[in-house]
Image (cartoon, rainbow, N blue to C red; front, side, top):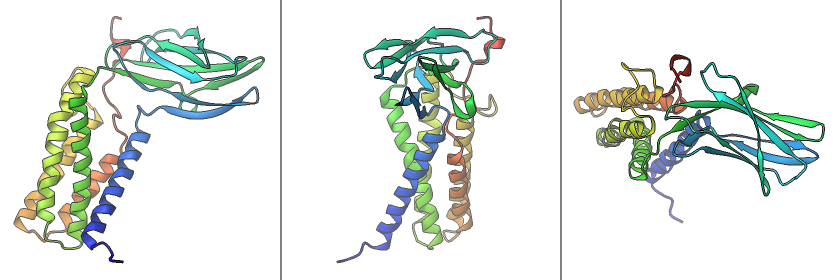
Length: 272
């Protein structure tokens, strides 16, 4: 049996590596749902607590709880506010316990925790480290904007990784791959990224120098390091330091949770 040539193996490795990094970023991000399982009344309950929702309607928080002896309550209030906690029951709908979280304007956040009870047995569902779950509302982003943005950013990470491999093996396509990396990162991050931000949170750019949104700042860093790497490679196509360093910086940037320090409303500073 003929083995794949090395170029194919390099691409396979780059694709797998890119998928792993992208999945890690998604799972560690502040909008990824809180998942877990508990035992109540000798029954296992698997739950998923949402941390993001569109603000077209109230957000549905639902738990699959077939055991009719189990009921629940939710306590919630606006995040970063002087509000008092509001307590409300979860309503049963067939095998589910449901609550409709009142919607907020884009970038507004709610914090909440749920208590499930069966007889005298109670269990509280919270976020990480026992803290309330924080969910953020956003505007609707059209798929014709969102899908190309995600695809281009994925390809940018893929070609960043592949360019580093090409540099390490002293390949002849390092400069070409660096240009392709920028070809994906620039429109994906600097054109479609701000448009996504505008649809979701009402502002094109909330990173430096106007704010501290890490997603926006990460995008600028990724593009700048690859611009510098491409310039160095144009002068010296055999340069290995710059493309490898740029790929490492991109990797570090991707390992920072997506949407961290993103748009949010401080209700303690508003009149509402």
